[in-house]
Structures are given as C-alpha cells and as structure tokens.
Length: 216
Image 1 (cartoon, one colour):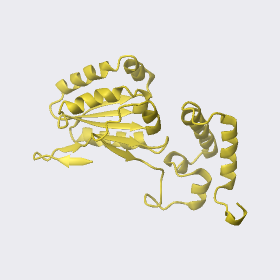
Image 2 (spheres, rainbow, N blue to C red):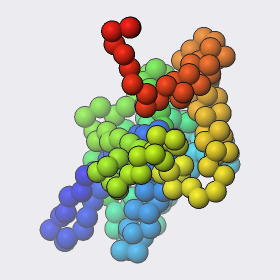
Image 3 (spheres, rainbow, N blue to C red):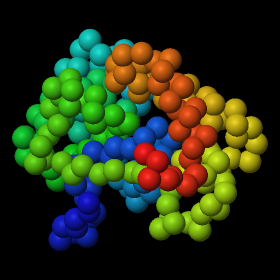
Image 4 (cartoon, helix red, strand yellow):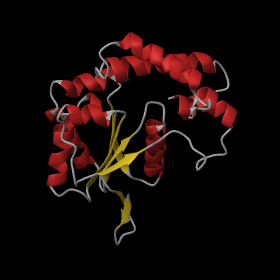
C-alpha cells in the first residue's frame, strides 16, 4: 500500500477499505491520518455520515472537485484525501477517477472506506478497477489477539462488542437492529424481514453446537 520516492516521502496508493459495520475501518483510518498529520502531511477528510457534508455533495458532487482543487492549492506537498462511507454518494467515485486520470498520483492520494461494496456494485458505481487497491477489514481473529472463545461465541468478534465492558447485550441488540435496517431492509436483500429475523434467532441458538450430518 505504501511507496517511497527519492525524498523518502511515503505515499499511500489509492485504496478502498471495505468491511462490516463496527470492524474498525473509521477508527483505523483516522489513527493513520493522525500519524500522517504529525509527520507534516496535509489531509482532507470527508465524513459522509455527517448530514452536513453528505448534503453538500449529494446533489452537487462536482463541488468535491472544487473543494479538492482548493485544498491542493493550499498544500505544499502531497494531499491525503479520506472519504468515509463512500457508498453513501457513489457519484463521488467519478470525481476520484478524474483526479487519478489527471496523473496526480504523487500530488493527491485517496483512502476510501465503505461497509457495502455490494451496494456500489449493484448501483453500477465506478469501482475504479485497476486504479485502486481493494482491501478488506474483518472482525478480530486469533491472528490479531488471543481470543476468549466463550466471549467470542457469545458476542462475536467485532472490536466494539468484544472489548465492551458494560451494556454488551444492549450494544449487540442495537447492532443487530442497525444491521437489519441498513444492510438487509434498505438494500432489499430479503423480501420479508420477519422470517429473516427468526432465522437470525435460530442461527444464534445453534451457534457452536454439533451438527449431525447423518440426520440432515
């Protein structure tokens, strides 16, 4: 993901970072941006979960080009552009494409996060094939930390739930409701939501139990 030029400046290759809600995409990205700021790198951040920023670009995505050109004029070195939840306004990908085609890779780099690559594909969005890396951030695994198996089976391995010290059941319930609304109902992945909710409950009850394949 990173390359260095002869001046020992580190450049981020354009990248998508996809992963489920709560996997830590935004936290990981903002931590990386903070490190870049400390090293003197100029950054431009767009949070599309912000209704104010989302409203600015929703009906006029061309404003993104104007804003970015203004930011480029202000910075002396390279500019790192971070767009969180890019699937909220897929048309911004055409503007990102413009800057990549303008041969500005050493002047501006992009880090784009999203919870739904599926939504982008289904909507015919410009996925910048061959121009960006496509990376995935998964929940915690044994490669990350020494997992507590009992807690992992009970609450899953999303960082926010796994490490929570209080109200974990309420947080898990809230996550499931958001998942059903944002990932299932809004994207119309199932025709009837009620049977899917019953399936989730049954799947949770059977999680970790032995399966007798001879009776299947």
